[in-house]
Image (cartoon, rainbow, N blue to C red; front, side, top):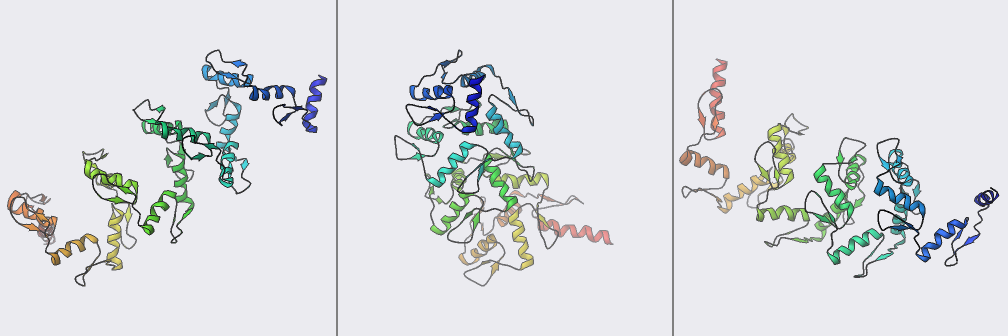
Length: 411
Protein backbone atom coordinates (compact mmCIF):
# COMPACT_ATOMS: atom_id res chain seq x y z
CA UNK A 1 0.00 0.00 0.00
CA UNK A 2 2.86 2.33 0.95
CA UNK A 3 4.64 1.52 -2.36
CA UNK A 4 1.53 2.55 -4.32
CA UNK A 5 1.38 5.79 -2.35
CA UNK A 6 5.05 6.55 -3.13
CA UNK A 7 4.46 5.82 -6.85
CA UNK A 8 1.41 8.10 -6.91
CA UNK A 9 3.32 10.99 -5.28
CA UNK A 10 5.62 11.04 -8.31
CA UNK A 11 2.64 12.38 -10.33
CA UNK A 12 2.85 15.58 -8.27
CA UNK A 13 6.66 15.78 -8.03
CA UNK A 14 7.21 14.83 -11.72
CA UNK A 15 10.08 12.67 -10.52
CA UNK A 16 11.17 9.97 -13.01
CA UNK A 17 13.80 7.87 -11.22
CA UNK A 18 13.90 4.93 -13.68
CA UNK A 19 16.24 5.60 -16.61
CA UNK A 20 16.76 3.45 -19.71
CA UNK A 21 20.39 2.32 -20.08
CA UNK A 22 20.09 2.41 -23.90
CA UNK A 23 18.61 5.87 -24.35
CA UNK A 24 17.81 8.99 -22.31
CA UNK A 25 14.18 8.18 -21.57
CA UNK A 26 13.06 8.18 -17.91
CA UNK A 27 9.95 6.73 -16.26
CA UNK A 28 7.96 7.16 -13.04
CA UNK A 29 7.35 3.42 -12.64
CA UNK A 30 9.73 0.50 -12.96
CA UNK A 31 7.29 -1.66 -14.93
CA UNK A 32 7.04 1.14 -17.54
CA UNK A 33 10.83 1.01 -17.90
CA UNK A 34 10.70 -2.80 -18.31
CA UNK A 35 8.12 -2.49 -21.10
CA UNK A 36 10.13 0.28 -22.78
CA UNK A 37 13.37 -1.77 -22.73
CA UNK A 38 11.67 -4.31 -25.01
CA UNK A 39 11.92 -1.67 -27.78
CA UNK A 40 15.71 -2.17 -27.65
CA UNK A 41 15.78 -5.93 -26.96
CA UNK A 42 12.97 -6.77 -29.41
CA UNK A 43 11.38 -9.03 -26.77
CA UNK A 44 7.66 -9.73 -27.27
CA UNK A 45 6.61 -12.07 -24.47
CA UNK A 46 2.84 -11.92 -25.06
CA UNK A 47 1.87 -14.23 -27.96
CA UNK A 48 -1.57 -14.61 -29.55
CA UNK A 49 -2.95 -18.16 -29.31
CA UNK A 50 -4.90 -17.71 -32.59
CA UNK A 51 -2.08 -16.43 -34.82
CA UNK A 52 1.68 -15.85 -34.81
CA UNK A 53 1.58 -12.26 -33.65
CA UNK A 54 3.42 -11.32 -30.44
CA UNK A 55 3.43 -8.12 -28.39
CA UNK A 56 5.61 -6.23 -25.92
CA UNK A 57 2.69 -5.33 -23.66
CA UNK A 58 -0.15 -7.48 -22.32
CA UNK A 59 -2.73 -4.77 -23.05
CA UNK A 60 -1.71 -4.81 -26.74
CA UNK A 61 -2.37 -8.57 -26.84
CA UNK A 62 -5.81 -8.14 -25.23
CA UNK A 63 -6.74 -5.47 -27.81
CA UNK A 64 -5.41 -7.64 -30.66
CA UNK A 65 -7.40 -10.72 -29.55
CA UNK A 66 -10.62 -8.78 -30.16
CA UNK A 67 -9.90 -9.14 -33.91
CA UNK A 68 -10.45 -12.90 -33.47
CA UNK A 69 -13.35 -12.70 -30.99
CA UNK A 70 -15.11 -9.79 -32.71
CA UNK A 71 -15.56 -8.13 -29.33
CA UNK A 72 -16.05 -4.34 -29.40
CA UNK A 73 -16.58 -3.31 -25.78
CA UNK A 74 -16.44 0.46 -26.32
CA UNK A 75 -19.77 1.68 -27.74
CA UNK A 76 -20.64 5.22 -28.82
CA UNK A 77 -23.58 6.73 -26.90
CA UNK A 78 -24.57 8.88 -29.91
CA UNK A 79 -24.69 6.19 -32.64
CA UNK A 80 -24.42 2.41 -33.13
CA UNK A 81 -20.68 2.30 -33.73
CA UNK A 82 -18.51 0.25 -31.37
CA UNK A 83 -14.72 -0.10 -31.08
CA UNK A 84 -12.06 -2.52 -29.86
CA UNK A 85 -10.04 0.28 -28.20
CA UNK A 86 -11.16 3.08 -25.89
CA UNK A 87 -8.83 5.53 -27.66
CA UNK A 88 -10.66 4.89 -30.97
CA UNK A 89 -14.01 5.59 -29.28
CA UNK A 90 -12.70 8.92 -27.87
CA UNK A 91 -11.48 9.95 -31.33
CA UNK A 92 -14.79 8.86 -32.95
CA UNK A 93 -16.85 10.90 -30.44
CA UNK A 94 -15.19 14.02 -31.79
CA UNK A 95 -17.26 13.51 -34.97
CA UNK A 96 -20.34 14.26 -32.84
CA UNK A 97 -18.85 17.00 -30.66
CA UNK A 98 -16.75 18.62 -33.40
CA UNK A 99 -13.86 18.85 -30.94
CA UNK A 100 -10.40 19.31 -32.45
CA UNK A 101 -8.04 19.47 -29.47
CA UNK A 102 -4.73 19.42 -31.35
CA UNK A 103 -3.72 22.86 -32.70
CA UNK A 104 -0.80 23.71 -34.95
CA UNK A 105 1.60 26.22 -33.35
CA UNK A 106 2.45 27.69 -36.79
CA UNK A 107 -1.06 28.26 -38.14
CA UNK A 108 -4.69 28.11 -36.97
CA UNK A 109 -5.44 24.59 -38.13
CA UNK A 110 -6.81 22.15 -35.55
CA UNK A 111 -7.10 18.35 -35.68
CA UNK A 112 -9.06 15.53 -34.06
CA UNK A 113 -6.03 13.22 -34.03
CA UNK A 114 -2.59 13.96 -32.64
CA UNK A 115 -1.08 11.89 -35.47
CA UNK A 116 -2.72 14.21 -38.03
CA UNK A 117 -1.22 17.24 -36.28
CA UNK A 118 2.27 15.64 -36.38
CA UNK A 119 1.91 14.96 -40.13
CA UNK A 120 0.57 18.48 -40.75
CA UNK A 121 3.50 20.11 -38.88
CA UNK A 122 5.84 18.56 -41.44
CA UNK A 123 4.41 21.02 -44.01
CA UNK A 124 5.99 23.83 -41.98
CA UNK A 125 9.24 22.02 -41.16
CA UNK A 126 9.61 20.44 -44.63
CA UNK A 127 10.51 17.16 -42.92
CA UNK A 128 10.00 13.96 -44.96
CA UNK A 129 11.37 11.14 -42.81
CA UNK A 130 10.28 8.21 -45.01
CA UNK A 131 12.61 7.86 -48.03
CA UNK A 132 12.28 5.41 -50.89
CA UNK A 133 15.24 3.06 -51.27
CA UNK A 134 14.65 2.79 -55.05
CA UNK A 135 14.49 6.50 -55.93
CA UNK A 136 14.95 9.97 -54.42
CA UNK A 137 11.34 10.46 -53.34
CA UNK A 138 10.62 11.04 -49.65
CA UNK A 139 7.32 11.18 -47.76
CA UNK A 140 5.82 12.59 -44.58
CA UNK A 141 3.87 9.38 -43.84
CA UNK A 142 4.99 5.76 -43.77
CA UNK A 143 1.74 4.68 -45.48
CA UNK A 144 2.59 6.97 -48.44
CA UNK A 145 6.02 5.35 -48.75
CA UNK A 146 4.51 1.82 -48.68
CA UNK A 147 1.98 2.83 -51.36
CA UNK A 148 4.76 4.45 -53.42
CA UNK A 149 6.78 1.19 -53.39
CA UNK A 150 4.00 -0.23 -55.57
CA UNK A 151 5.23 2.06 -58.39
CA UNK A 152 8.49 0.04 -58.46
CA UNK A 153 7.05 -3.42 -57.68
CA UNK A 154 3.71 -3.04 -59.50
CA UNK A 155 2.05 -4.64 -56.48
CA UNK A 156 -1.62 -3.86 -55.79
CA UNK A 157 -2.48 -6.00 -52.77
CA UNK A 158 -6.03 -4.74 -52.14
CA UNK A 159 -8.61 -6.44 -54.41
CA UNK A 160 -12.30 -5.65 -54.70
CA UNK A 161 -14.54 -8.65 -53.89
CA UNK A 162 -17.19 -7.44 -56.38
CA UNK A 163 -14.97 -6.88 -59.42
CA UNK A 164 -11.39 -7.47 -60.54
CA UNK A 165 -10.02 -4.04 -59.65
CA UNK A 166 -6.95 -3.92 -57.40
CA UNK A 167 -5.45 -1.02 -55.46
CA UNK A 168 -2.14 0.00 -53.90
CA UNK A 169 -3.85 1.46 -50.83
CA UNK A 170 -6.52 0.03 -48.59
CA UNK A 171 -8.36 3.36 -48.34
CA UNK A 172 -8.60 3.50 -52.15
CA UNK A 173 -10.28 0.06 -52.05
CA UNK A 174 -12.70 1.25 -49.33
CA UNK A 175 -13.63 4.29 -51.44
CA UNK A 176 -13.99 2.14 -54.59
CA UNK A 177 -16.34 -0.31 -52.82
CA UNK A 178 -18.83 2.54 -52.43
CA UNK A 179 -19.40 2.28 -56.21
CA UNK A 180 -20.98 -1.14 -55.53
CA UNK A 181 -22.70 -0.33 -52.20
CA UNK A 182 -23.84 3.18 -53.15
CA UNK A 183 -22.73 4.37 -49.71
CA UNK A 184 -22.20 8.14 -49.35
CA UNK A 185 -21.09 8.63 -45.75
CA UNK A 186 -20.15 12.32 -45.95
CA UNK A 187 -23.16 14.68 -45.66
CA UNK A 188 -23.21 18.45 -46.09
CA UNK A 189 -24.43 20.26 -42.95
CA UNK A 190 -25.95 23.06 -45.10
CA UNK A 191 -27.94 20.95 -47.57
CA UNK A 192 -28.93 17.30 -48.13
CA UNK A 193 -26.11 16.38 -50.50
CA UNK A 194 -24.00 13.35 -49.60
CA UNK A 195 -20.63 12.25 -50.98
CA UNK A 196 -18.50 9.11 -51.29
CA UNK A 197 -15.29 11.04 -50.61
CA UNK A 198 -14.56 13.41 -47.75
CA UNK A 199 -12.50 15.55 -50.14
CA UNK A 200 -15.57 16.03 -52.37
CA UNK A 201 -17.58 17.20 -49.33
CA UNK A 202 -14.86 19.74 -48.43
CA UNK A 203 -14.89 21.09 -52.01
CA UNK A 204 -18.73 21.16 -52.08
CA UNK A 205 -18.90 23.12 -48.79
CA UNK A 206 -17.05 25.96 -50.53
CA UNK A 207 -20.26 26.57 -52.56
CA UNK A 208 -21.90 27.64 -49.28
CA UNK A 209 -18.91 29.50 -47.81
CA UNK A 210 -17.82 31.10 -51.09
CA UNK A 211 -14.22 30.16 -50.29
CA UNK A 212 -11.84 30.01 -53.25
CA UNK A 213 -8.43 29.27 -51.75
CA UNK A 214 -6.54 28.66 -55.01
CA UNK A 215 -5.69 31.97 -56.73
CA UNK A 216 -4.00 32.46 -60.10
CA UNK A 217 -0.72 34.41 -59.91
CA UNK A 218 -1.25 35.74 -63.47
CA UNK A 219 -4.78 37.12 -63.12
CA UNK A 220 -7.50 37.73 -60.50
CA UNK A 221 -9.27 34.40 -60.94
CA UNK A 222 -9.59 32.11 -57.92
CA UNK A 223 -10.83 28.51 -57.67
CA UNK A 224 -12.34 26.09 -55.17
CA UNK A 225 -10.07 23.23 -56.34
CA UNK A 226 -6.33 23.06 -56.88
CA UNK A 227 -6.88 20.97 -60.03
CA UNK A 228 -9.02 23.79 -61.50
CA UNK A 229 -6.23 26.31 -60.83
CA UNK A 230 -3.64 24.04 -62.51
CA UNK A 231 -5.93 23.60 -65.54
CA UNK A 232 -6.63 27.36 -65.67
CA UNK A 233 -2.91 28.24 -65.59
CA UNK A 234 -2.56 26.43 -68.91
CA UNK A 235 -4.60 29.29 -70.45
CA UNK A 236 -1.59 31.50 -69.70
CA UNK A 237 1.14 28.96 -70.55
CA UNK A 238 -0.66 27.37 -73.54
CA UNK A 239 0.39 23.95 -72.25
CA UNK A 240 -1.67 20.93 -73.40
CA UNK A 241 -0.05 17.93 -71.70
CA UNK A 242 -2.70 15.30 -72.53
CA UNK A 243 -2.24 13.83 -76.04
CA UNK A 244 -4.50 11.39 -77.86
CA UNK A 245 -2.66 8.23 -78.95
CA UNK A 246 -4.94 7.82 -81.97
CA UNK A 247 -4.55 11.30 -83.41
CA UNK A 248 -2.48 14.44 -82.82
CA UNK A 249 -5.02 16.28 -80.67
CA UNK A 250 -3.80 17.58 -77.30
CA UNK A 251 -5.81 18.80 -74.32
CA UNK A 252 -5.35 20.98 -71.25
CA UNK A 253 -7.37 18.61 -69.02
CA UNK A 254 -7.21 14.85 -68.66
CA UNK A 255 -11.00 14.48 -68.58
CA UNK A 256 -11.23 16.27 -71.93
CA UNK A 257 -8.83 13.67 -73.37
CA UNK A 258 -10.93 10.81 -71.87
CA UNK A 259 -14.09 12.26 -73.47
CA UNK A 260 -12.29 12.78 -76.81
CA UNK A 261 -11.00 9.17 -76.87
CA UNK A 262 -14.63 8.00 -77.03
CA UNK A 263 -14.74 9.45 -80.58
CA UNK A 264 -12.28 6.69 -81.56
CA UNK A 265 -13.67 3.87 -79.37
CA UNK A 266 -17.35 4.73 -79.90
CA UNK A 267 -17.91 4.22 -76.18
CA UNK A 268 -21.06 5.82 -74.72
CA UNK A 269 -21.02 4.84 -71.04
CA UNK A 270 -23.96 7.00 -69.88
CA UNK A 271 -27.34 5.36 -70.60
CA UNK A 272 -30.79 6.85 -70.08
CA UNK A 273 -32.95 4.81 -67.69
CA UNK A 274 -36.12 5.83 -69.57
CA UNK A 275 -35.04 5.00 -73.13
CA UNK A 276 -32.19 3.31 -74.97
CA UNK A 277 -30.18 6.45 -75.71
CA UNK A 278 -26.55 6.49 -74.61
CA UNK A 279 -24.10 9.38 -74.33
CA UNK A 280 -20.36 10.00 -74.27
CA UNK A 281 -20.64 12.60 -71.52
CA UNK A 282 -22.53 12.53 -68.23
CA UNK A 283 -23.70 16.15 -68.60
CA UNK A 284 -25.29 15.24 -71.96
CA UNK A 285 -27.27 12.47 -70.21
CA UNK A 286 -28.41 14.92 -67.50
CA UNK A 287 -29.65 17.35 -70.19
CA UNK A 288 -31.35 14.52 -72.14
CA UNK A 289 -33.20 13.26 -69.03
CA UNK A 290 -35.04 16.59 -68.91
CA UNK A 291 -36.87 15.48 -72.10
CA UNK A 292 -38.57 12.82 -69.94
CA UNK A 293 -38.99 14.88 -66.73
CA UNK A 294 -39.93 18.14 -68.48
CA UNK A 295 -37.60 19.99 -66.10
CA UNK A 296 -36.43 23.43 -67.24
CA UNK A 297 -34.23 24.71 -64.40
CA UNK A 298 -32.81 27.80 -66.15
CA UNK A 299 -35.19 30.80 -66.06
CA UNK A 300 -34.76 34.14 -67.78
CA UNK A 301 -34.71 37.08 -65.32
CA UNK A 302 -36.32 39.38 -67.92
CA UNK A 303 -39.26 37.19 -68.98
CA UNK A 304 -40.94 33.93 -67.96
CA UNK A 305 -39.12 31.67 -70.41
CA UNK A 306 -37.36 28.63 -68.98
CA UNK A 307 -34.76 26.35 -70.56
CA UNK A 308 -33.39 22.85 -70.17
CA UNK A 309 -29.82 23.99 -70.80
CA UNK A 310 -27.85 26.87 -69.33
CA UNK A 311 -26.24 27.71 -72.69
CA UNK A 312 -29.72 28.05 -74.23
CA UNK A 313 -30.60 30.60 -71.51
CA UNK A 314 -27.38 32.54 -72.21
CA UNK A 315 -28.23 32.70 -75.94
CA UNK A 316 -31.84 33.71 -75.19
CA UNK A 317 -30.74 36.55 -72.86
CA UNK A 318 -29.07 38.19 -75.87
CA UNK A 319 -32.61 38.90 -77.18
CA UNK A 320 -33.00 41.30 -74.24
CA UNK A 321 -29.44 42.69 -74.17
CA UNK A 322 -29.07 42.92 -77.96
CA UNK A 323 -25.59 41.41 -77.66
CA UNK A 324 -24.22 39.76 -80.81
CA UNK A 325 -20.73 38.57 -79.90
CA UNK A 326 -20.07 36.52 -83.06
CA UNK A 327 -19.11 38.83 -85.96
CA UNK A 328 -18.41 37.83 -89.54
CA UNK A 329 -14.89 38.71 -90.72
CA UNK A 330 -16.13 39.13 -94.34
CA UNK A 331 -19.05 41.51 -93.74
CA UNK A 332 -20.67 43.56 -90.96
CA UNK A 333 -23.16 40.93 -89.87
CA UNK A 334 -23.06 39.74 -86.25
CA UNK A 335 -24.90 36.90 -84.52
CA UNK A 336 -26.10 35.84 -81.06
CA UNK A 337 -24.92 32.25 -81.53
CA UNK A 338 -21.62 30.82 -82.85
CA UNK A 339 -23.45 28.20 -84.95
CA UNK A 340 -25.37 30.98 -86.76
CA UNK A 341 -22.04 32.62 -87.67
CA UNK A 342 -20.61 29.30 -88.97
CA UNK A 343 -23.71 28.76 -91.14
CA UNK A 344 -23.59 32.37 -92.40
CA UNK A 345 -19.89 32.13 -93.36
CA UNK A 346 -20.79 29.41 -95.85
CA UNK A 347 -22.39 32.18 -97.99
CA UNK A 348 -18.88 33.61 -98.43
CA UNK A 349 -17.00 30.30 -98.74
CA UNK A 350 -19.64 28.53 -100.84
CA UNK A 351 -19.25 25.45 -98.62
CA UNK A 352 -22.19 23.03 -98.58
CA UNK A 353 -21.18 20.23 -96.21
CA UNK A 354 -24.57 18.46 -96.04
CA UNK A 355 -25.00 16.28 -99.17
CA UNK A 356 -28.03 14.21 -100.07
CA UNK A 357 -27.32 10.48 -100.33
CA UNK A 358 -30.10 10.08 -102.94
CA UNK A 359 -29.09 12.86 -105.37
CA UNK A 360 -26.30 15.38 -106.00
CA UNK A 361 -27.83 18.27 -104.08
CA UNK A 362 -25.88 19.75 -101.15
CA UNK A 363 -26.88 22.26 -98.49
CA UNK A 364 -25.35 24.75 -96.08
CA UNK A 365 -27.62 23.58 -93.24
CA UNK A 366 -28.49 20.13 -91.95
CA UNK A 367 -32.12 21.23 -91.47
CA UNK A 368 -32.36 22.10 -95.18
CA UNK A 369 -31.03 18.65 -96.14
CA UNK A 370 -33.61 16.92 -93.91
CA UNK A 371 -36.46 19.01 -95.40
CA UNK A 372 -35.22 18.24 -98.93
CA UNK A 373 -35.13 14.49 -98.27
CA UNK A 374 -38.67 14.51 -96.88
CA UNK A 375 -40.11 16.43 -99.84
CA UNK A 376 -38.42 14.55 -102.69
CA UNK A 377 -37.21 11.16 -101.43
CA UNK A 378 -38.81 9.78 -98.25
CA UNK A 379 -42.13 11.69 -98.46
CA UNK A 380 -42.09 11.61 -94.65
CA UNK A 381 -44.42 14.08 -92.89
CA UNK A 382 -43.61 13.89 -89.17
CA UNK A 383 -45.46 17.10 -88.15
CA UNK A 384 -49.16 16.22 -87.75
CA UNK A 385 -52.00 18.59 -86.94
CA UNK A 386 -53.81 17.81 -83.68
CA UNK A 387 -57.09 19.24 -85.06
CA UNK A 388 -57.26 17.32 -88.36
CA UNK A 389 -55.51 14.58 -90.34
CA UNK A 390 -53.12 16.83 -92.26
CA UNK A 391 -49.37 16.30 -91.84
CA UNK A 392 -46.34 18.29 -92.97
CA UNK A 393 -42.65 17.80 -93.76
CA UNK A 394 -41.56 20.78 -91.63
CA UNK A 395 -42.63 22.51 -88.43
CA UNK A 396 -43.09 25.83 -90.27
CA UNK A 397 -45.74 24.27 -92.54
CA UNK A 398 -47.64 22.93 -89.54
CA UNK A 399 -47.60 26.34 -87.79
CA UNK A 400 -48.99 28.06 -90.91
CA UNK A 401 -51.70 25.42 -91.25
CA UNK A 402 -52.80 25.68 -87.58
CA UNK A 403 -53.71 29.35 -88.17
CA UNK A 404 -56.65 28.09 -90.28
CA UNK A 405 -58.11 26.39 -87.17
CA UNK A 406 -57.50 29.46 -85.01
CA UNK A 407 -59.36 31.66 -87.55
CA UNK A 408 -62.28 29.16 -87.60
CA UNK A 409 -62.58 29.42 -83.82
CA UNK A 410 -62.91 33.24 -83.96
CA UNK A 411 -65.67 33.21 -86.64
